[in-house]
Length: 173
Image 1 (cartoon, helix red, strand yellow):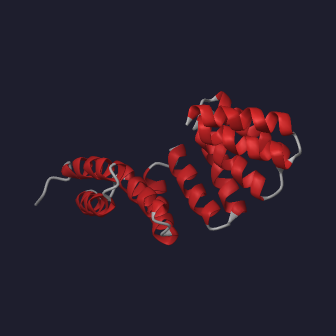
Image 2 (cartoon, helix red, strand yellow):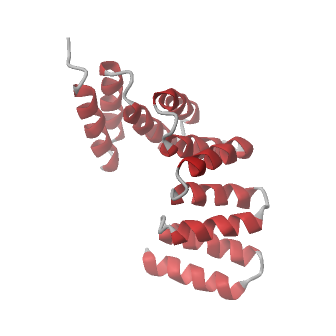
């Protein structure tokens, strides 16, 4: 019988493999981690993120749904599941999950940025602008967030602010 504590080690190594772009090895390690410890929240989240990266949305959603009961107050899981819903075009579900992530962690900038993208997609530009600004204030994915907000300004006809944000995005890349 293998020690369930090894599950965390496999999950960590899987994360390292994923960060190096070695997705096959990462998936193998996440699978081993989950076999060793079916209550290892991070292994489900990391494997779900890997599936999301590969655009295997149903598998990603399945893993995030398995992670949620292991820790109902972990904002990262709601945000990740929201990303799956957004990628599938299920914007109402995505917004609900981003709202939940923000209610659990009001300083979680990535959830603001992701919710802003949903607001942009659904034509709620003022809400999108507010969330992009909050994400920037929280120092989240600055280059990408400035670029997205710049595109929103451009869409709204505010060329000066658009140019300013797009220039900041370029400088940060």
